[in-house]
Amino acid sequence: MSGRSYLFTSESVTEGHPDKICDQVSDAILDAILAKEARLEREGYISPTGVPACVDDVRCACETFVTTGTVIVAGEIRTQAYVDVQKIARDTIRRIGYDRAKYGFDCETCGVINMIHDQSPDIAQGVDQSYDMQAGATSDELDQIGAGDQGMMFGYASDETDALMPMPIYLAQRMAQRLSQVRKDGTLDYLRPDGKTQVTVRYEDDLPVEVTAVVVSTQHDPQIEDMAVIQADMLRHVIAPVLDEVGIAWADAKVYVNPTGRFVVGGPMGDTGLTGRKIVVDTYGGMGRHGGGAFSGKDCTKVDRSAAYAARWVAKNVVAAGLAHRCEVQLAYAIGVSHPLSVMVDTFGTAQADEGVITRAVQQVFDLRPGAIIRDLELRRPIFEKTAAYGHFGRNDPDFTWEATNRTDELRAAVAAL
Image (cartoon, rainbow, N blue to C red; front, side):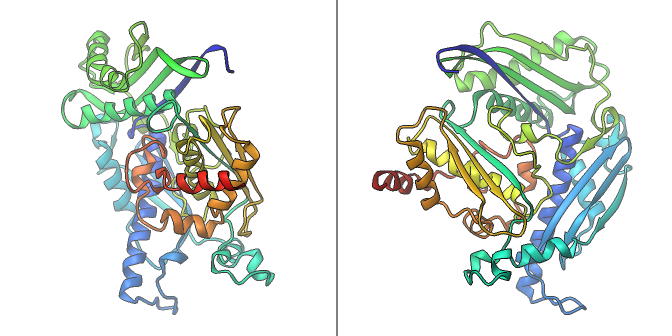
């Protein structure tokens, strides 16, 4: 699209959106299991069936569904750690802000149904001992873990923002985060947890130059009937602080706040929610491609999550190393196989070195076997609940290890040597 003027739009949602409630509950359960299994392992716990606690052996694929007054948690989990699913769900919903019946959903009175069961042994055998290991083709410990599923995963980075994220999703995420912040800190105490943001950015020669439209839809107290009040507050407390901090022009932007005229019924009372239904919000807002696999509720052997994190890590380091202005990485895996089937690097014509050379450098510098990804990104830690709202990427948090630009020197050296 070089040499053209075009518009690109991305959206985000707040932590109180029904789908995001589900993502957070699923990841809160995963975190609780990882934390308790690690503690039991340190204490030397052995189950009545003779199985020792071991955080490396945890397997989790946890899905959550919410609707009016009801939470259903289901999935396949292998662990020696009992966790109180009902309490975790209620505590997560309380933290989000649904703690009163008048909000349409109440953490104290909603029903929580637990339908979790064991992981299939057919899947487990290929993850616990990879196809490569079973065939006697390797004795490398990192080849022990097979990919938890087949599929392709993408990672993306662009130097158009300091976070090396596309501008539209970066702005939409920060506005959604700000919307929750001013609700929780009491700045705008009439706000309720559900909300959405959307930002349209004009590009010239593939560079973001101006915000042309902003949409904010926020759940509110029924006593606030004048949308002009909410619009003024959104401009002052949500939109302007985010856009002015980034420094992008927006003086001529069209701003729409609650364009239906009312947003009182929200959360699970307004819409059902489901884990994994905001995968584009979770990633690059549509600017980068998506393999289709969701993240939340999945342990690190599920390459839907871990390989997508690794692909972002690779793409971000390529851009941070100055090897390209934009980079997209695709990885592909077969279930039970320890090595990726393919590694693709696309720099959209922005490479500062031969793209084939960059691809070979990536394969030299990054070990993209699931076992190595888990090791290098430290993905056995209970850090996933906070990834489940406001984006898995582009966040300034040391626990988001896939955001580290710690392989740039090695990449530059590998490119120079090839």
